Image (cartoon, rainbow, N blue to C red; front, side):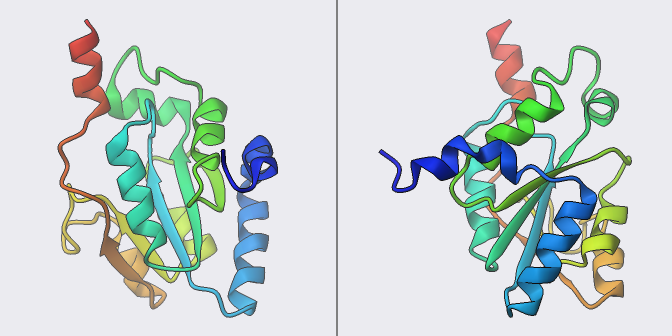
Amino acid sequence: MPANISEILNAAARVLDRDGIIAETKSARQAGKTIVLANGCFDVLHAGHIRYLQGARELGDVLVVAINADEQVKILKGSGRPILAEHERAELVASIEVVDFVTIFTEPTVEQLLLAVKPDVHAKGTDYTEETVPERDVVRSYGGRVAIAGDPKNHSTSEMLKRFK
């Protein structure tokens, strides 16, 4: 049984809008904490997602996870996606022990959120390198760094869904 069951039961309370995320990260930064931001669709959670988020958390003190809004997931992944609605995906991710806060972003990329929060570290999965992360120049523009986290990319929601068919 989890050490702090009330944390898990209150996962939805850790899903914040942009202003809430900005306020929480500002407070954490003032307390000397290192802020890490990870992002993705997280449509159907799998071991690769968990390992990515665990690796991201190891890069700092506070882990914020940004989840693509439903409309963007449909654009990125195609019709029939997302499987789970954005608020359900956000609550599931917020219930993961290593995650401190979750937010949903509606823009096509996470760049505007990065500029608003200015995390110390922007963590991406192992399907990227530090030089191929699309947001790397934005992160570097405010003095942040890009880091790669997680295990080798051999998990895929799209592949899982093909197997179910």
